[in-house]
Amino acid sequence: MLDWKRTSAGETALLVEGARRVGKTTLAKRFAEREYSASMVIDFAHTSNDVRETFNLYATDLDRLFQRLQTLTSTRLQEGDSLVVFDEVQRFPPARELLKHLVEDGRYHYLETGSLVSIRRRRARFVLYVAHQLPFAALIAVDAY
Image (cartoon, rainbow, N blue to C red):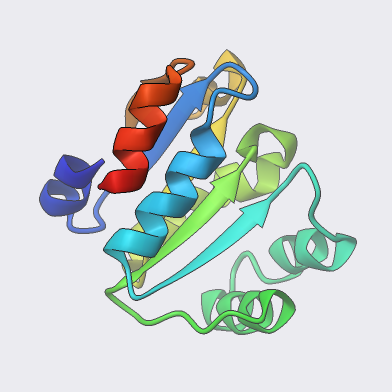
């Protein structure tokens, strides 16, 4: 993940794919906390209708999209040093489809997590990492990082 951050410079999104409950979300959140000045995590398994509607309404107006998402999530993103995490992205295809435009916009870095192989169907300039269930010792090592 660190290599992706250093080499992509925001020009690609990162997809962390793996089985359910292996720690993808925890890994994404810890990475965001340690490597970025700000982050926004949108969990499409539990997100509000307001967030979903924001993607539908403002897909062509990224300024308004980001303003609204920051308001709804009580987050303040900083251009060039923020990570936006789309958790369980396979549950909301409009966000996945918008990703190419978000990456091209270049304001923020993007990380997606997902559990289904079907999210690979629409490749939009991303780097793929597959998450496998980690032993407890590995999680402690991540926490110590």
